[in-house]
Image (cartoon, rainbow, N blue to C red):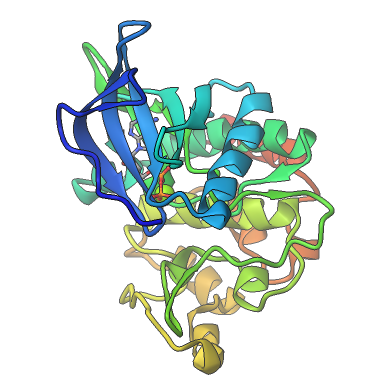
Length: 302
Ligand SMILES: Nc1ncnc2c1ncn2[C@@H]1O[C@H](COP(=O)(O)OP(=O)(O)O)[C@@H](O)[C@H]1O
Ligand SMILES: [Mg+2]
């Protein structure tokens, strides 16, 4: 059953007072809310309907978050059902901004990009060790916590949105796009080639997605194309998507352009390997990736 969107001031489930809507997706909404039982601010992710399929998806997200423990992964306080049947997650409130907002006013330098990459790669180690895949790393799903006096910083980046996360080893081919009638809406720009093609996804998929985020944070556009052509395309016309895939030679040439940010060869090599079209050619796992990023950081430092 579709239900009305919660209003500011409304108390949900006798416990959560809605303060402000901060995010809105097809199946759910995110609010800043006050937990009246404990007296602190939380992020409340509420499903838009009480339909079993939608409720289950939010519970899957809760199950995954409940076992993950890492400073760069949002913490789950609790989850449950509202009296009208909608599901909710009560999450650690991250005051700050999304990486997308942060990047809209400037790029990261090489050192910052590597620091961000290292932090998120170590979150991937935890996620993959617990046998999950995130599958939806992109700038709107990375929050930068803000604390006085520095404000939002990449050193406090946190990964959110395990809404399309999967379990490792299951034949995970479900894509990260949501369907609206026969149209896909979403961000193929941030998808790995194997996701676009509906092939098996592995930890290498998350490594690719992180590579795309790192690339974008220094170049201001996703690695696929220069124009940033965002897409809503017909399911049947899925071949179109392949226009968005990366041609490694082009990427290599771009990294070497004099107009490009001056990245060290070690950093370029890390990015190119993360963004290989063939998952087998990327880093073997997130721990190897951490080591490679650390190596590049040392080279840059010195
Ligand atoms: N824990 C949180 N603290 C603060 N803001 C959050 C939090 N979780 C999500 N948000 C905000 O809500 C938006 C949507 O949340 P997300 O979990 O990505 O849901 P969706 O599935 O709709 O993309 C995020 O991009 C972010 O701006
Ligand atoms: Mg999201």
